[in-house]
Amino acid sequence: MSKLLSFTDYDIRQMFDRLADLGASCLGEDADMFGDTLAEAIEDGPRTHDLPFKLQTIDELRILLACTDAEIDRVTGALIRIDPTADIEEPPNWGSFPTLRAFWSAVLHTFEKDPEVQAGREIDPIM
Image (cartoon, rainbow, N blue to C red):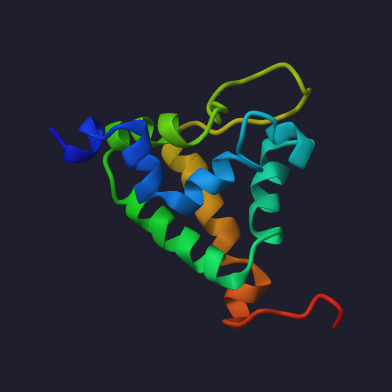
């Protein structure tokens, strides 16, 4: 059995600190406040964070995606209060993912494609 499966929720939130922050905001219980669809809520993740946060999030996501499906299930339950695999009716057309691995892969893709991450530097929003 993986050691990660026996970690407490607190231990998991400490290990995946940036993902826990996302779980308290755009991927939290009120994720629909950040977009009309789950994809929009995911896209909101990088927008309000600085470059170091984004890079640390990418590192955490790569660690998470190297885990087994059981570990990903355990970690997800400790980090976010939504079920990205559920086909919910409200709000309509919210969307869902076939697996938690697919969900976290989409989050990773969004952070990797962020313009600041691509440029390797913070971009002044005024420019």
